[in-house]
Image (tube, rainbow, N blue to C red; front, side, top):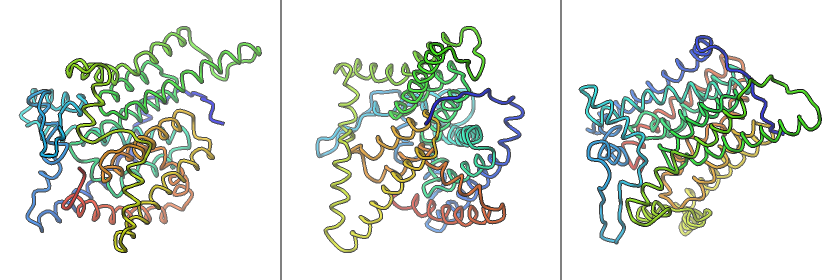
Length: 396
């Protein structure tokens, strides 16, 4: 159903030319979102740049970049918010960029986010183009851009950086470049806890490729693509590389806290984050039905979860490549089944871009004027919602 059939990647110059329409469309959508944010913030007397670079998690990342690890906040209820919960790659990049330029750490975080969002858009296009063709690739990128919380892609958060690393790692798997896939998975594991999803995708694909080769050899069949000498060794080394980022940071946190390999879980528990199979989320949704106005929100939450699950089922039915299914499945499970702040769940789902591919295929089947109109209307709505959301509750 989802056997891994790798194909060579096109030359880099050709790849960039193919991706150009998607990248230009993505930049236009994000520019519209930033313009809407600027206008909305001005009307409310707020700084849009501060909203993008100096609130919530962005402050924690810049504090790590500036002062390193060891900072924590003890709340009156006994919770301990430690900056050890934040993985190090984004603050490392902020520190490096601030050291070689006149940018502040917050400025550096914003620049990294902008560049990473473009890299993520290109990676999403590369994956979708490889699997379904360039038209579907353009549509996938535009759909990712017009997500209701797409403004997060321009914030000094780690979502864009993680999505870029994940997308290109998956593309490397699909094109048989195992060392690149493993190295990017390592970096993704240094970016967010959900780097586990990239590691799982690389490992599943690697094992499936090995089993397929062994099966072909036993039956005396011919490989669909020629294997270069050393491919097996590169694949094995790529698989070994993939988990080192996440495992290394988690083990370092355990050593620093003196609580061993599970010390990172204690750090997350201080933020009331954990994995409970969705029990806390289910209770949160159920509580919405205690009064009529909030019941509407409960219905919306159930509809949103049902849509996400439905999209994943369609991905399976459309026979997406195995690494995409594994990656999207793990990201979705971790987002929906974690006990983290419930307002974060849409943001946590944003890297699960393979879920958008069925919608991209549907959009690609429309005539160009009609698909452009659909994207334009949704982009305007998304820009308005992003400006409203970020000036209100916004991401935690």
